[in-house]
Image 1 (cartoon, rainbow, N blue to C red):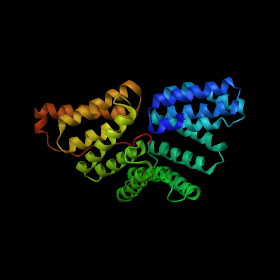
Image 2 (image 1 turned 90 degrees about the vertical axis):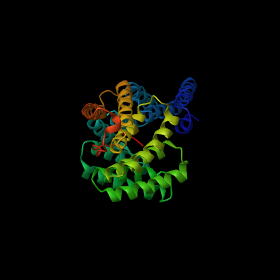
Image 3 (image 1 turned 30 degrees about the horizontal axis):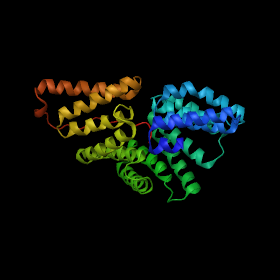
Image 4 (image 1 turned 180 degrees about the vertical axis):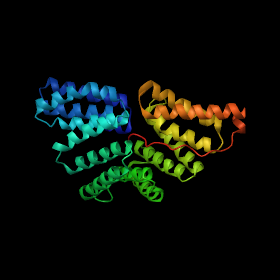
Length: 313
């Protein structure tokens, strides 16, 4: 129940349900059930992009797995993704490689490979990222079949890698396929749909289509605000490129508001994330333009600066 709530309902309620389930299992002496729920709880914190809490809880979950005779490297995979979301690509690679040493399930290997691809992408290693994304997609297709909704996740990651490697046409096609599959399987308001919309918009920005990008980004922002609330750091991933699109359309005041809101969210949650420096630079450049031109209304459209890949679907 907690895992389902974490996907479609309140993250806080999901956490409360999982904590009660873990306590019930511990009271009953059911080590296997306690470890299973502890892993679910840790994963829910990772999906909420709370890397500090993930790091604090990781050893407790490892202890639960040891008592149950489970694989402690499962925690490494979760911790690796949390580190990636916090901007620590090197730490993510180290944790994910540890997790891969003991994982035998094909579906879990595929997830670890694609997350490892994202960590390499964050370091600018497009070749390694694309290799891992393609490898993970083929593994997922063999495990699930082409029509399974989980395939949308792997298509999404591959499309993101293609965009970062400059393969914009291929990226747009791959991401469009991922969006269609996810909308059909999960509904139009799912958080995964918002993540795919975000990457499609980033591709359209790179293709010089800020109007189309802004429309998708506003849709993604609305979905994430409903899913996470207006103060969650995952909104920053959308607000930064939305500011880029608005700046490219000559909407300087709106662009500045988007950048400033994104920066405040990063400052409150993940102040060391590389995106904060990107936001500082965008605000500095935009304020300089406004100072020179005197009024937001007089600012002419300008090409958006390159935008880095967001953290997690």
